Length: 173
Picture 1: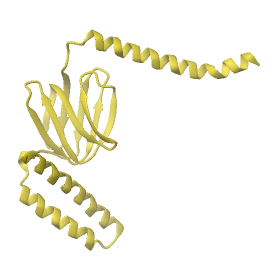
Picture 2 (picture 1 turned 180 degrees about the vertical axis):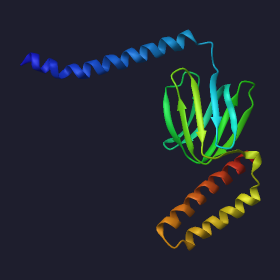
Picture 3 (picture 1 turned 30 degrees about the vertical axis):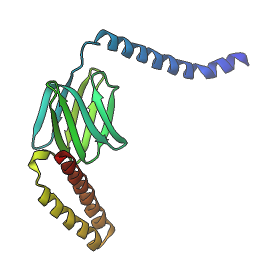
Picture 4 (picture 1 turned 90 degrees about the vertical axis):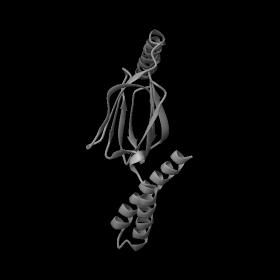
């Protein structure tokens, strides 16, 4: 009976050992590269390439589960992006702010990061009055929708434009 109980615990023990070994390896890598702070960043959309294997300090994004920042030696992650502003902190201290409609970010174990956006445009490309006008039209389209599909599509436009308008307002402050 004692032997069977030990056999039942084996998979859990192996799992714990694997997690411990990975966390120790990651900690050792962090100590060995403590002087490094930059990471390799690639950011593209179907129409533009904003960064290609560029060295940056940090990238801030709006994920489905909330906002988060990615720095050197970040835990490996794959996340879907919400409409919002991606802020790239460059090595010289400047920040580039680019609005994305959606996409995905991948953070790899070697501190390389890839961000692929469905659509992406620097905030400077947007006109506040045009965004406000489009938001008003989209809000009207939600009310005038004939079915659930139309209503859902219009609501997505409203959410995206509202987020863009908030980003433009915050950037003006």
